[in-house]
Image (cartoon, rainbow, N blue to C red; front, side, top):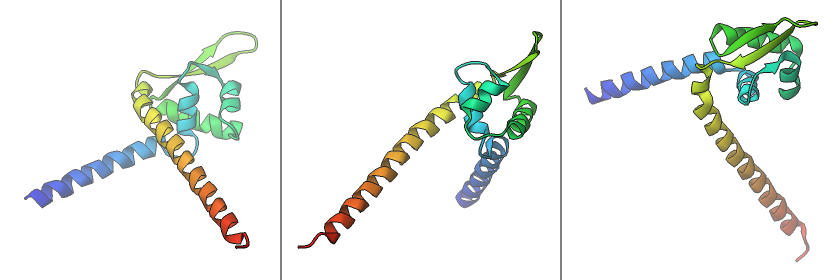
Length: 130
């Protein structure tokens, strides 16, 4: 009985993770969310903040995020007409996730650089004549 519960809970967890990755997956959605965390942005501002994203891809990602209630699109009647994107209250539930990813990413980056530095030092020591 205990094994069945564990299998069922693992299965439910996997479904939840797959659902989250379906909505947030890919190269661009989380960087877009992080770029909007400190306030609304116009399309071009977002494109500059999310480095290397093309206008076509940014537009596609924003439309998908709008469908999933992660961002809102606001048309501002000015000359020329401008469009502003902002996070929804629902997307703010992702802030603990983005904070955790930021912390983990920083730690991982330090770890990788430290390991690389140590390997270079070891190679230098090995290549020096005794």
